[in-house]
Image 1 (cartoon, one colour):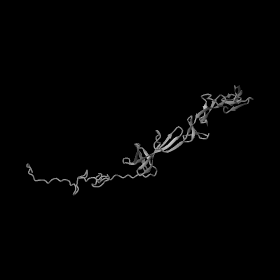
Image 2 (cartoon, rainbow, N blue to C red):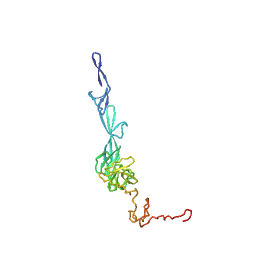
Image 3 (cartoon, one colour):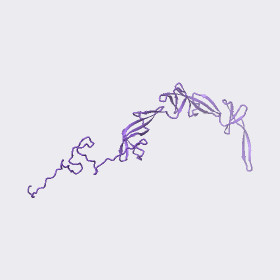
Image 4 (tube, one colour):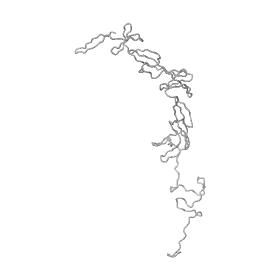
Length: 309
C-alpha cells in the first residue's frame, strides 16, 4: 500500500511543511476479504478496489463453539450463557482470541449435572463459583446472588455444629424469661434459618445491679429499656422493647443487722415449728418469764477465810 507521510519542520522564521511517500506491506485476511496494514499505530482496511479506510478497532470474526481454548491466554467472559436441558446445565463460555488484524470470538461448552432441591422446588448447581437455579417445570435459568433462605421455624436443638448468629430474650413474664437462639446455616444450595428457645429464671446481680439469667451454663446480662450497662466481661442480651423490668427488693434485717429472729412456736416459712430456745443466738440470753428461765448463781455465804464454809 502506498502511503504519504506529512511532516512539519520548525524554523526560525516559519514552519516548513513537507511530505514523504512510501509503501507499507499489507496482509490479506480471508475472514474480512480485505487487506490490512498497521500504519503509524493505526489499522487500515484496504478493499479489493484499493480503497483504504482507517479503523478505530480491529474487526471481529465468530468461530462458533470450539472444543477448547485456542490459546490459554485468551480472554473469557465473567459469566457464561447458561441453559438447562435433561437435568444438566449447559454453560456456554464466550472467549476472545487476539490476532494481528482481528478479534476471533468463540465459545466453549461446559456441562454440569443439576441437583434437585426440594426446599425450593428447583434444580440447582454451582458453575465457576456462581449458583444457578431453574424452577421445576421451567427452562428459565437464574444466576443467584445468594443462597435462597428457607425458614424452618422452631426446633428443639441446633442442627449439627451450627452456632447462633443472635441471642435475645424473646419474652419476659415476671422473672420467667424465654431466651431465643437464632441460627443461620448455609447448606450446599440453600441457607436454613431457625431458632431454639430456652426457658430461664432471672436473678439479681447486686454487684452490677442488673438482672441476669443462666442458660446451659452461660450467664447473660439481660438489658431492659431503662438499663445503661457496659462491661467487657459480660455477655449482654436484650429484652423485648417495652418489657417490664422486675423490681428488686432488698432482704429485710433486724435493727442490729442480724437476720430476723425465729419466733418460737410459729411456722416461720420453713415448714417446721421450731422449739423455744433458751435465748436468741448471737444475743444476750434474756430468758422468757415463766419459761426456760436463765439459771441464776446461788447467793453468797459468809465464810471465814482458811476455813470451809
